[in-house]
Amino acid sequence: MDPLDSFSSAWQVVSAELVLVLGLFVAKFAGQAFGTPLRRALMLYAWHTAICFVAVWYALQNGADALDYYMHALAGDIEFRAGTAAVSFVTVLFASTLRLSFLGTTLVYQTLGFIGLLALDASLRLATAGKHRYTRLLATLTVLLPSISFWSSLIGKDAISFLSLPLLSSDSFSPQDGFHHSLCPLRNQNVELRRRKMHFVCQSRPV
Image (tube, rainbow, N blue to C red; front, side, top):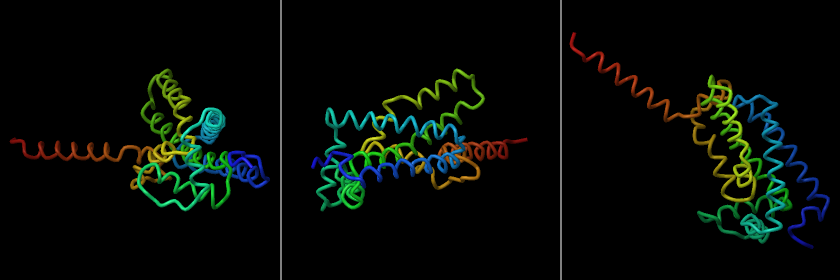
């Protein structure tokens, strides 16, 4: 049996479908957290998933690091090490323990990458709020660049790295207030420092 055959058993087909459905719930709740309308969040999820299927087809036809990660994870017994070995170590849970197919495992990673895409979209919407419509359109087209979704949907470091976008600011994240308060905590700190400096200058200026 070909280990890369994603339709060799009923479980591999059903599990891939379950991951897809789970991604819909992720789109809903992550969209709410980032202040993204549900319709837009689902559109981005559909786009990212479509690119994921293209990426899977490309990897199977032309080869990719994602295949190596999956095959190593199927073998199991992988020690955790920093670097690329860490990807195979994480993938063991899906490929070896849960027995997900290559497609199913890739769909897990594409869900992680989708959260990063949603965060990128939220940041660009914030940055272009109130700007000319063509500027906002350019921001949307940037989010829809195929290369962004392609590499963040395959098994590998890219999806995990892309996921780190919202996690970098998780310390100040507030689902009720939306993504804008957690977007740039360092920027907010710089603004506060400048405000305090101006206050100090005004207080120390001779009358």
